[in-house]
Length: 331
Ligand SMILES: NC(=O)c1ccc[n+]([C@@H]2O[C@H](COP(=O)([O-])OP(=O)(O)OC[C@H]3O[C@@H](n4cnc5c(N)ncnc54)[C@H](O)[C@@H]3O)[C@@H](O)[C@H]2O)c1
Image (cartoon, rainbow, N blue to C red; front, side, top):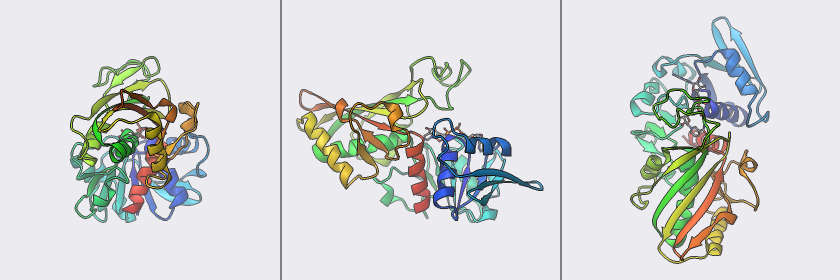
């Protein structure tokens, strides 16, 4: 059974998805917000529209429930994982999607009674294992790896690109910038934040900042060339990021060879994870895509044979929630 802590952008998408696809597996939810607020935000979504289950709130005595597609899920309002009685509902896996407990120590507060694993919906500095499916999921041992990080949306989008380049041409070195939409970790208007740039109004500027994807990628794909690094440019958009990756390959290539390699990977080996888009699209057109990355062949460039630049889009919310749900279902 699966429980979810933190019903924000990612937690709600995961809850809706599990309620539609695996209602018998979802057992309980937690968020400090009150019942009316949680129900309202589950029903109305500014980005993903109304393509989600019928949702109601129910109060029985002191207890709150979210009803999705006719099934009742207990909703708690704790702020400390150690106080959430997920174990009473036979939860074996907790999705930690609050963004507040990304360290092993914090996430491990869920590990009580029947709860065997916690999956953090973000990179973690010290989780037992960082998964980027399908590249290292086979190494995950749920008995040994009790606290698991599902890396980040950017890491999930970047890993397939690196994988194709490395397998097809050999990867010497690489650098990546993610053109990343605003998230609730920024400020709507200028307001203190530990990152001075994220303290600035999110919808006014291009905001250069760090990306936790690099740490997650280094952990999940340790064979990557050393020094792989880059940054995020937060832009005033709501959904869908662009990964812009520059690499030096071991042998000279043409743009057509690069695009063919992505095309081939999208058909069988990375089907469902990497896709290739048709031409002329913009970020909005990728909302609702569930692949970790959708390559844009028009943007492929080669400079002098071995220096290449390739770009791929991803729905940072929906595609990430899809990978997260696949992981907890496998667990
Ligand atoms: N938004 C994205 O595109 C995205 C993609 C991949 C990963 N992530 C990661 O997922 C995590 C959540 O991101 P988000 O965008 O959904 O965040 P969000 O800010 O939209 O939601 C956070 C939720 O957690 C709840 N919360 C706050 N304190 C809590 C506590 N003590 N206990 C339980 N719940 C608490 C809030 O009420 C809110 O509903 C972050 O670590 C983020 O980095 C986000």
